[in-house]
Length: 165
Image 1 (cartoon, rainbow, N blue to C red):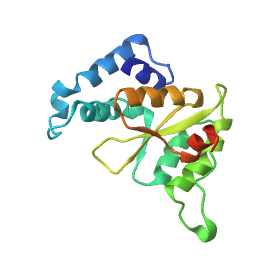
Image 2: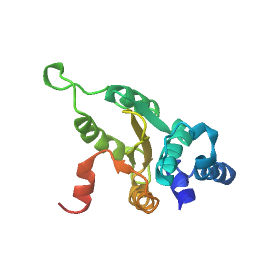
Image 3: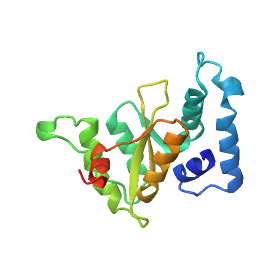
């Protein structure tokens, strides 16, 4: 299951050996001295943190949503529109930003567009946002649940819309 999850989180673009190496690194994180700083973690906590650390190059990471937006925009050619401003130049809430971003990503590329997911790293207040194929999202969330990992949609209304609410 972890192998399939890593493969889907990386757009199935990695060679089989690379995926195997990442999975082995994540599964072996409990014995990895790089994770000794974690105080009495559960196996699920170690797996969660290792997943984020090992896939970091695939994430947009920041403690401010406009920083995350710049990184996400850099993934596209042409880039996304500039970070939106609220009325009178007010800052947007994170939820407002993702509500604005979701339809833009749905329009991009084949395969039904993209979707952003957030994965908790268990150690910081940073947003760890990863881009996936929209069509893969249900399976990614299913695998995450089965593996006791915390992976969520960045935009809640997508789930309620899919359920017909």
